[in-house]
Length: 599
Image: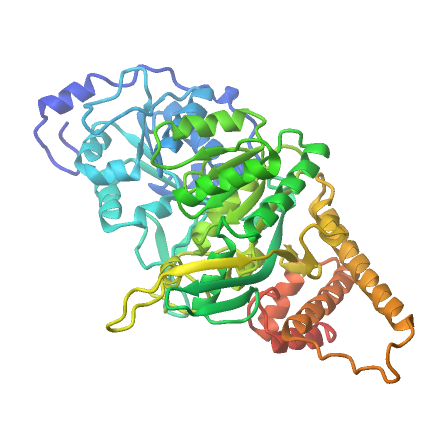
């Protein structure tokens, strides 16, 4: 292959061999494609209008990025712009998923391609490979890309920044591509590694931010009914642990404390031998039963664990709680992809996994999640929650149970926020990252001391709050009480507006019941001649009371103006500063209450 702007170059026997195996598969027929959603049609029109080499599409998990990408592939194969398609995916399991989805629309992709292969068989339009595969031998994929006019689809492109070798390999392998389509549901990263082929634009603050050509966020998809509303049920509780030096510590999840103490209390709660996890799993299974009885008969649950040993322990717990065995998927086990596929096609209640199901895996029936992992970066959290949002029919909701950890509560409250990848931004310490959490879970060694080992002693669980649309609802309710059951029993088929309305009503009923109990207690004859003065509220109780007051004021403004609760909360944060209300301090809550009263 010579000529062109690159000048003549020798043609090896290997390239001649590859050329002789040009795709013999039929061109896909566009009429056989499923109808596109509105955002897919808009993005497709924009893509065909621009006809640029690079195009980045950001769409929330469950929105249909795969269908959009395959439609573009079919268009380019049909008009002769490209002769071949290469898809790069994060995992081996997703290779098979891409190949199956492509085959359904007439595009044949070789998911079994290995770097040692010279070419795919003639009845394939191209191949599906992983980022790791490309990073190991970029010259192999560069040769394949130069041999035929190729469209490269880079799925979850942020993974190309995971390491220098991956990023450099992807850039080297696919620079010769005629077209590159970058897809992601989470375009942000926690580091400064630039993402290959993504455009960065400098903002007014001098920082470079990733720029997408098409954006379809969770808020847009929720409005269109493409994804499910997600309720976050945050559980707090008392935790106790001890080091081998004999130091015994106690803390309550959700209370203000140092990050080291937060991490250790969090770890104690997630201990399979404690009481916190069994209580939360009972609640999650009860919620799953409600969904199954209310219009989602095949609804499934997913427990996301930190490591393999803990995952197996959680599987034993869920069997004790439900009497039914859970499917267990570990990333390095042979047959993991097959087990995921089997679970997806069954009506089995529970799946336990570590990271295998954290991104891209399509199990639409997942509707209840237990976030029982110490992973805490915004990227991982968004990927994990993305497993539950895919809507199949109108009214389906998702419920995710998580520890009442301030950082996680903040991520849950900011579910609808769109993020970009920012280069050169100073790192702040407003939350835990995974490296910090890992360090905190090990007691730091002092000079000359033996390493201290962590020992969880006990943990209890109670429902702290329910987070939806950026707002916090409810007051503390012990596990197994009628107050908790009120929230676990929310109907399974609801629109986003109905969820907000019901949560507001539940909270009002809960507060009214508390007032009645207080009034009944006051009506009883005094046990002593002089009544004891009321005990001062603790900081935790004050925060709960202020959150209730703020939510009531936001709800009142919502009914007056029609603005969504989340937008009102976001405006208060813009005016007053500070984190979401689930994390806000007493002073910040008081300031927002004063501000919303003036709007």
